[in-house]
Length: 411
Ligand code: BGC
Image (cartoon, rainbow, N blue to C red; front, side, top):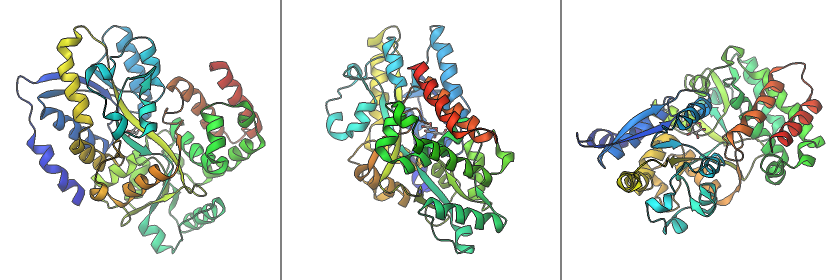
């Protein structure tokens, strides 16, 4: 609740004038929590006399948004800016559709204020092609505090403990795992487990470098088998639902655990829940020091008359990276700032934990959030994982083979 009050002055103080410059922005922040964060962005831009024109596309963790964007771009009418991240930035840059950020603003200071992994993520052929906005941690396990207290359950730190805990929760009549069953969410469960069981190096080899030896390994087959066990702890009526439908069950004390990125925290905090009081953020079992990251960023589309548009573009970029915005937006979004010089004392305990892990842990890009691969390849990988997860007859060894062949075909 405290956090929401902090944001109110910003939300109500900024108003765009009638002569405000319009800026059309495509994004997929449409869930509870995300909407509040998007409003902060809108108001911050209004304070710079920029009128936010909302091009919001609901659903599928951005999948639909990217398809709509392709259609708009192909018809020669892209929005001014769009939420594009990871290797997709390079794909759009490659076809010459983006403005280089270093032509829009002076990016000299980025070298000092942005961590290397962030800079690399938004760079293509030596140029910054997107403005980074936050770092989400993907491999979290969220626990409902009330249920864990009531059942006197310790935090599970190994997978064996996890399954014992899940059985106890089930026996007590609560839902062990809140999980909306869409392909990317199934794959997110897999990703968190695979990172923990394989470790950072093999995860990287498999899902960033697509090394066929690791993809086809006995260890990978074992990961798939263990992953399948998670399916027995779900509510099947949530299949096909978005992540926040599942997260609501944590907020209403109906479900005890959820694997999800920390945007879920943005939603809980927006409804007045408090980190470590109502819910806990703990490491995915056997994942100490491992951090799978997801970096949100915006690209600027190249349009007619660059000089005339440069002013609004530079205001956009500089606002997003200002200290005030980085603080207010990320407190709301559940993520941590992309800058390394922000005072973290106003952030909740989970963000502070994430910040420490980001600067001290082993970082890997999340493939389910398409930070490790293009969204095209990500879709193929996530579908194979999801089909395996939902098909009781599916075989782990055959799935592993199918996965490595599919990746080979696309690469
Ligand atoms: C985005 C987050 C967003 C989440 C759920 C992720 O891919 O990076 O900003 O909150 O999807 O919609």
